[in-house]
Image 1 (cartoon, rainbow, N blue to C red):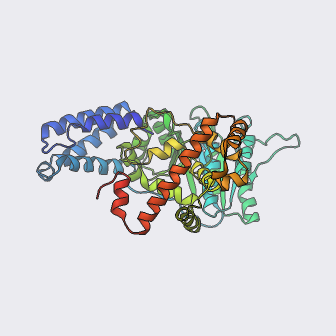
Image 2: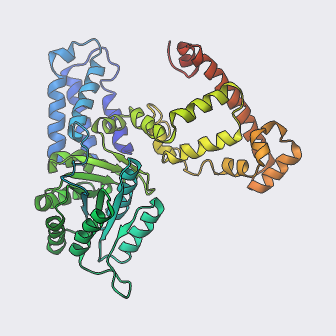
Image 3: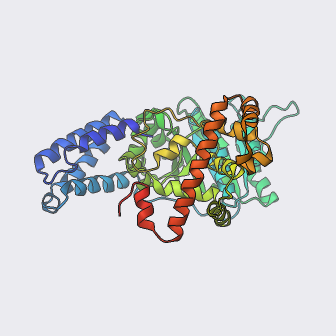
Length: 451
């Protein structure tokens, strides 16, 4: 995410990072490099200019120039202004006027509206909501079928109107209006309306979205932006906002080769908050947008808060206590290990998760981390009997050969898995003992931290 921009900002900041003293000359030089990095990332020229001027003005104050750690002060100023540029604070979805909450999704064709609609339904469902998806994209071939397929994966109903021949009716306004009535009838608290898009902004599309908004009186209008299109996305968002008065922006395809221009410009140009960010094709690859966390990632600081939140979604307190007892008593087995692997996979893209850990993102930027990295390990464990999973010590030579054949790997791969599992158990038991005795400093040192 924003790897190119992060690298260029890191290079630019080397002029002031770690220096015992900074001056107006090297600040000016650094800000020229920062502005160049922003423009290369396709950030709006005026936005980049105003941003660097504000940072420069604050950085050249007497307080910073004479500070004990002026380089760190400078980075803090840059970070604060970056957070402000991205929206300053996280903004939630609007509170509904009355149930059901109606959320209208708009955007150009190819921006990821339909996939986002399903992702949002899954996200809200995980928070205890009961959403209904409305298939109001009645022009794009198979758009309704696509929404129904995605909705089936997350067990969320779809409201669509079809003729006797099974072909979707072309009255999008009717679909949206009746979907709201159906949600109210079923006692559902949320309706997400997926509307049609075009390859470009045109009068017919805009009028239809305006008519849907008038007919359904939505609590929230979200405009979906393809982050990879840079300033074109910002201009399109502005055109939609002029007509629809949107409530928030959704950035999609942030996992692609995006330069960051849309994310860094859109808040200032459109004057509407970014509410969600999509970082992959999977239906769980959606996060609420937090300006401070995004600024941290852009500056290479990681995003440990989001990492912890994702972990908390998969691990509950009671399960954690049971797991800790197993680790202390050396009862932790391959069955438990397999369960934890599944939970880690459910947290999202492995490379994206690693990128949230401070200092790790830059180390793995050129490393191809596949999401199927655990496939061979899973296959080996699945090829074991229940007894072997619970008591790995009984796995002798002939059993290892059988497991290798069953999982399509070599015997040495099975040997390596069992060896690594034994070493991991020892380390986990040691760490658990240290933590239970309150030896936090020793634990921190073991993990590479400081006393």
